[in-house]
Amino acid sequence: MLTVNVRISNMLSFEKGGYKTEDQKRVDSLMPGEKKSIYYDVYPKHMARAGELPMLLHIIEHYNQDYKLVQNEIKRKLELTVME
Image 1 (cartoon, rainbow, N blue to C red):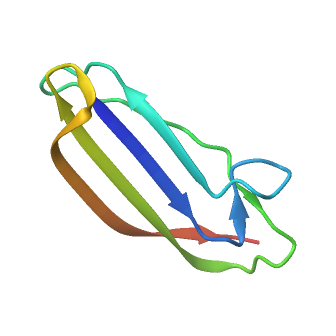
Image 2 (cartoon, helix red, strand yellow):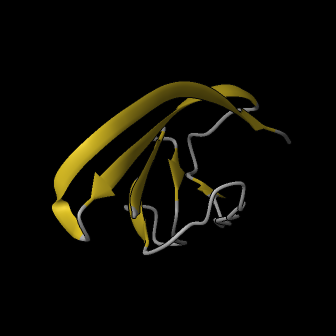
């Protein structure tokens, strides 16, 4: 069981209205070696400029079939490229 949390720059948004900069998804099961893809639509705000913008990926691995119990956490700072 995994919780995937993605946070993007304040110059971007996950919705056209421009306010949602963080999203969380849960993956109920994942077999060893299995891959899971999660896709997002990302919208620029009027102040966004072309270039690299920060993005934080936080993955939490749970155990014992309970999302409250944390077995492992991974945090990665990434760059999201904005093109004109």
